[in-house]
Image (cartoon, rainbow, N blue to C red):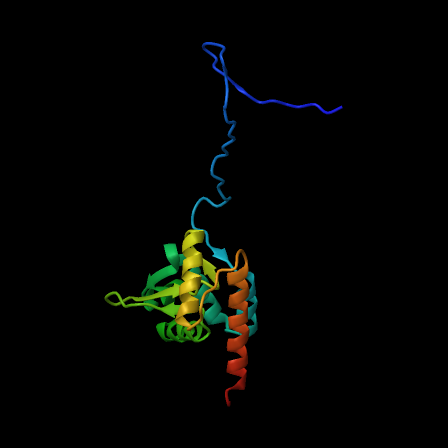
Length: 176
């Protein structure tokens, strides 16, 4: 014996049963556990960084850059400021940044007076909306001369992994 449950709406003032009513459950926007200052990071590039053997100074600079990362992955800083913050000299910061750029972690942006600007490669992490992250990944692939075919969830991530593998093969085939 099956039972049917009917859901309806009643006007509480008149008692009238309202036909064609729609029941909607609206949940409040979920908040993460961080009050402020958070970014999303991709796990596979973190493994690539660990295997790149960046060295302690470059890794420390990378962490400072992540801490200063602004919305849409931009960061503007003065190398001397980072040197003071880390208790080291500016030339070592310059070498560390050059290494992060060389590894593709940081992308060089325009200069603002005496400050350099960079952005975190969106393949490594993102601070901003998911939609803009997806767009940034597409732009990155187009910059490499790749055609984007949107094949549903996960397809962009799979395409990026194919790109990384192709770049690694290309790099390995270069003469030393």
